[in-house]
Every structure is written in structure tokens, then in C-alpha cells.
Length: 146
Length: 116
Image 1 (cartoon, chains in turn red, brown):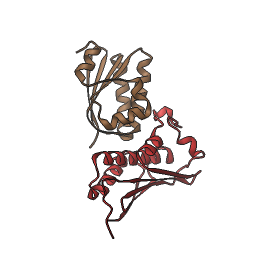
Image 2 (tube, chains in turn cyan, brown):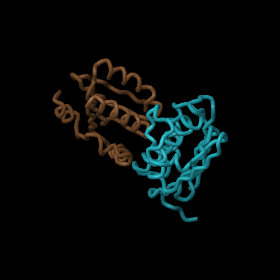
Image 3 (cartoon, helix red, strand yellow):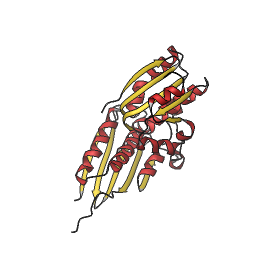
Image 4 (tube, chains in turn red, orange):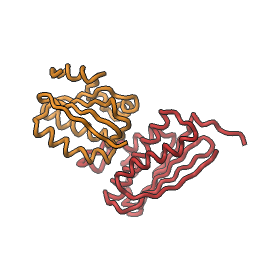
């Protein structure tokens, strides 16, 4: 069963929990394991938090876009902002690297995403925004015969 | 589920029982309150009971690392108890596992600090 859903929500921190609930609901019909569910909620939380804190620098009236796509047994999650963007993606993805130590950011967001997902792809253009696209093969989902 | 925390002070030890989901939204809400509480009661040691913590991401790691650094300056310690498998993985990934003291229960953590 293939499925796709597109969401657009305001860049407020309350929506971190909303986005986690959305991904959990989206994959519920596929009977994910508890471990898969936790991993996916965590990566969505990281990506949406990045958009709010870094992309939009805490500004509340912007939009965060999230697309969920289930194809065969691969889930692809895309989280996009139209914020400040990043100059050096490679540096941003280093473990413990953060531009906001004063906010007590751990700098582990991308490391967690890379650890929990099979593939993570980041595209960013300065002053245009950042898109995180990540995918994971869900072992619990049985590929259907067509 | 929203995040709530129950605090208990025993001498210079602050015990925090965390419930719900600890994300960026929750850390922003509790950070200042936590700092004030630690300042007011001259807290040297922190015990975090995570038995009822249902979710945590890197924002939670940031909060814990922040308090750890803070307590280190006062030669204090931070003890984590009743850690779940998912939180344990985040600890391992970030290196927090190497610097924090892990105890299986709240009682053992308090015993270790001599305030049981």
C-alpha cells in the first residue's frame, strides 16, 4: 500500500510534538515495531526543531513543510523550511557541532538522523532555506505483490 | 503527551522525576525554572529519574549536558536512573554515557549520594 501526505504548519515549538504524532499516525497502518516508531518520531523531531531554531531563528510566523511518502516498504520523510539556509552543510552535520551553544543545543541532531535512517540528504541555499530528505526501509512492512 | 517534572530537594541534591516528552519545546519551558531552583537551594548533585519519560531527542541531551557542565564547576555529580533503551542509545551516540553516572533506581542513586 503506497501512500503520501503533505503538511504545512507554523514554525512554533508546539508543532514539534504535532509532527511526531503525524509521522506516528501515518505509519500506524503498516504495523511498525516500537523501535521503528521511536526512531521515526525522533528524526522528525530533530528535523522540525532544526527548521524552527536554525532555519527560522525562532521566528514564529513562518511555515515548515513536511512530506511523508510510503513506497513499497520504504518511508521517505522530507522536512523543508524557507529560512536562512546553511553555508557549510558538511560542518553542520558533524557530531556535536552547533551554531547555538548558548541555547544548550547538543549538536547531535544530524548525527541522530543519520544513525536512525538509511539515508539522509540535506540541501540548503543561503537565505532560501533548507530541505532534509531522509528514508528508511521498514522491516515490519511486508512488500505487497502487484 | 506534554512534559511535566516533579522536583524534590534533599539537602544539596535535587531529584527530578520527568514525565512525558522532553523535546525543544519542553526544554525551553523548564530550563529557567530549573536553573533558579538549583541556584536558590545551592544544589550540588542532580538525580534524574527517567522511568516515566516517554520520549526524548537531542534537545534533552543539550539540557542534560548543560546541567552537567554547571554541576561540574561545583564538583557535583549527575546521576541518571531508570533509563530506557531509546534514551540509552542517544546517550551512547553523544558520549554522555561515558560522563554520567547511571543507576538502576532512584533509591540507589540517592543512596550513592548519602541522602536516601
